[in-house]
Image (cartoon, rainbow over all chains, first blue to last red; front, side):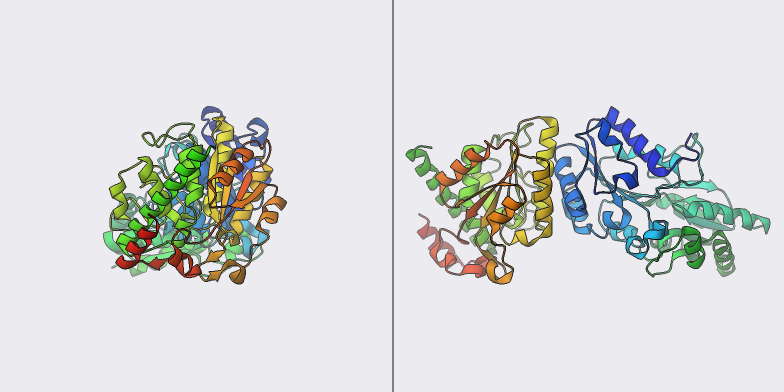
Length: 313
Length: 273
């Protein structure tokens, strides 16, 4: 049912349904409601969907104040402004004070495309991952987002939703069973594990197809929730395959690679290669160009997989 | 407000100041100056104005207070203890390990604290969020908040100011503890915030500027503020940092966070008799 729909449209529609059922939900934007698909909510919910203007730090603390009044605010902006720009408000007003606020960042990493380096958050997961009690969720497609949102509302605590906002090919079908705190084994394999999140899941699946042509079976795991990471699933696969590649649309410092490595160093030390942004800023360009330039294609994953397999003891 | 009531609340202010000196003095160091300057504002709110129940700190529809200048926690703790939110003896635990009374206010620890604050500029935004929430819930509550004059150097304060005015949050009544001092020196020398009244007016607020140590003036200003139909109110309390203890007042900005010796504690308590 979500084919050819933009993620932001699905997001807006889902919020509308949830707001009808749950009077606690409020949606706050900082002048990006049109960009994020939340503008229409204001027609139906003129009090509970509103704009604070270009003032993200105020948005975060206002949401914390509303949460102290038992509302469940969703604050929405682009990923860099939802995280690095308002890190202290997120840390203190919201998370230190244990306020039930959901933080929505859109256009993660290279998906900011023509907005360029200023708007490309390569560090947002790293920034938030070091804040205690933070849940960090990155949906792969509209189906996963749709399955996740009700669970995120039910979960009492801060959740960061790192959301691609335009059309994205569906990876999941509607029968998919989702658990916010459980990583998904999308494909089983025995030679190498590909841990992937967000837009890199599709690349990882294509890499697995490619590898199978050469007789290599890759296990593909979608770590949709990077914090708290599902240690059991991550470690179990590592024990089985003995080599891994992490695939993320983020700096390899602080994001999925770091999170996976932190688990494996204790549970099952194996060779791991990191596909992602290799510790540099972004730049203006379309996503396909940047994916190639930053070596984040399925072919790059294939090569990394072969390298780690060679390093197996 | 009749004469007797004013006298009673003035006595209460002296008592609260004694509690503040005692709680910080027994520890030996703390935010003395900016706690003492807030006392009349807090006393008028908690003993005369606010709809609250110390036996039911989370009462639905209650009025709320956000101490945005969260470092004045010791003053608010003294008031809350005296009101019966917790035992007065707990004030002796200020800033000691495992205490419920940390330097800066924490809603998860202290009964009666409505919002965590301390990273400056954030509390007033939280209060705006509460005022907005109260409007949606239509519970007719008033939201009170207090910022410092130094705190008004934070850009976030003015983001909050714009949003409150834009949303016509007449249920928000805020105070500026305008004691004209900040950690590094007189506010006017570090980064001037004057004319503070004109700034708030320009941001669309209903503004009063009064003697921040006058019970009667504070009460009258709040009564006037409640007549506002479409604007939030800022009451600028012109105060003295360290008010009530002459040798602390004389220290100026140095009393922001200061050591308090046993001798000084006793001397201050003498003066506050």
